[in-house]
Image (cartoon, rainbow, N blue to C red; front, side, top):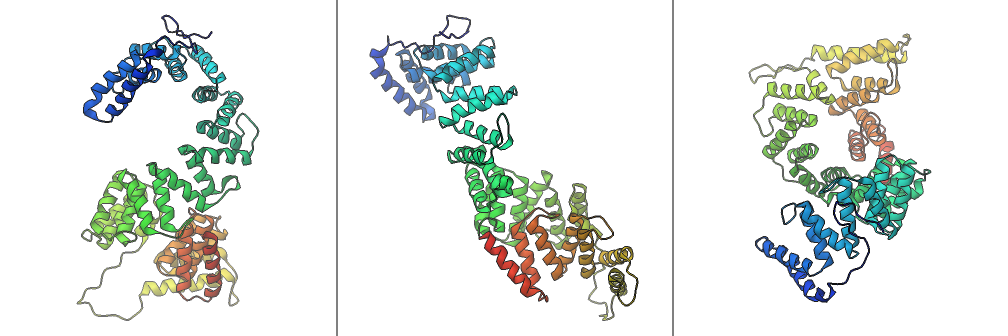
Length: 501
C-alpha cells in the first residue's frame, strides 16, 4: 500500500471508505448551492460555509475543492495545513484528484518536507490507474531530467488516453528525434490531434509549420486558420500574425477590415508591432477611417516600446506634416533614431539630398539641373563600361563606381542596376539585402524594373522577409508603368494570384 509521507498519520490511497455515505444526498445539495453562490461576489462567504458543510458530510468533490482553495488561496486565505486535511480526507476515500494534489504538494514542498521521489511513487500508482494528469507529470519530470526515452514512453500512455499536452510532447519528440526515432508524418499527426483538442501550444506550432513549410507542410491558408484559432484565445502574437496575413492577402483574399480587427486587439495589449501596423492603416485609411492624429498616438506608444519601424514612420509623419506640424529637423531626428535601432530604410532617407524649396518669387528655370546632368552622364558611362559597348573595354569595377555615383544622386535606373550588381555578385559579393535596399529606392521613383525585382525578392524571401502581398503589390506596380515586359509580368501575376487562392 502506497502512503503519503506527510509527517502525520498516512493517508491511504484508493481505500474506499463509505462511513459517511448516508449523508451524501444532503451533502450534494449543500455542494450545488455553494457552486451557485460562488457566482456572486457578495455571497462568497455563504458559498464557503455551504462547501464546508458538504465536505464535513463526506462529499468528496467538496473536500477536494476546499483543499484546493486552501492550497491556492482561492476564495479563502491560503492555508497549507487546512489544504492537507481536506485533501487527505478525499484521497483516503479513493478520490484520485485529491491524491494527485497531495503528490504535487509533496513534490513542491508545500506545507511539508519536499520529497520528489515519494511524490513520484504516488504518481506512478495513479498512472497505473490511467489517471492522465499523473502520467503527464511523470512525463514532464522525466523530460526535465533529460530522460527523453522515459518521457516519450509516459507521453505515449497519456496521448493514447487523449491528453493533449502529451500529444503535443509526442509531436515534438517525433519531429525532432527526442527520445525516439524521427518520424515527421507521425509527429505532424500528433500535433494535429493536440491542436484539434484546442491545445494552444500545438495550434501555434502547427500554424508556424504551415506558414514556413518546415517539414514540407507549407499551406498559408491552414496557417492563417490556426493563427486565428490561437488569436481568439487572446494570444497577442497570433493576433498580430493574423492581422498581417489578412492585410496582405496571405492564405486568403486581402481583407483590410478583418485585418484591422485583429490588429486593434493586439494593439490594445500594447504590442509594438501591432501599434505600428495600426498606425500605418490609420495613415492610409485602409480597413479603418483615416485619422492622422490617432496614427501619431499609436506611433508615440510604439516608439516608447522601442519599435524601430515606428521611429521611421514618425520621421515620415514630421517630414510630410501628417497630423503634426511639418518639421524637417524633427523628421531627421526620428530617422536617426530609427537608424540607431537598426532600421535600414531610414539610412536611405538620411542619405537623400535635401534640395532647397523654390519660393514663389523665384524665377521659373527650365534648364536641367547640373547635378542631374552629371548623374545621367555617370549612368551612360557606367552602362558602356558594364557591357563593353561602343568598342570600350568592359570594366565591371568602373561600372560599379559610376552606377553608385549616379544612384546616390537619386537616378532610379542607376539604383536598379546597382541593386542587380549586388544581387548577382558582380564586382561585389552577393548581398540580397543591399540589392533590396537599392531596388526600394528606385521603386520609390517609379522604376518598373525595380518594382519587378522587388516583387521577386518578396516572393522568394531573398534579402527581405517573404511576403506574398508585397510581391503582388510590386508586380502590379511594375505592370502599371507600361514596360515592354508587361505581358510577361501579367502572366506571372496571374500565376502568383492562383497560387495564393
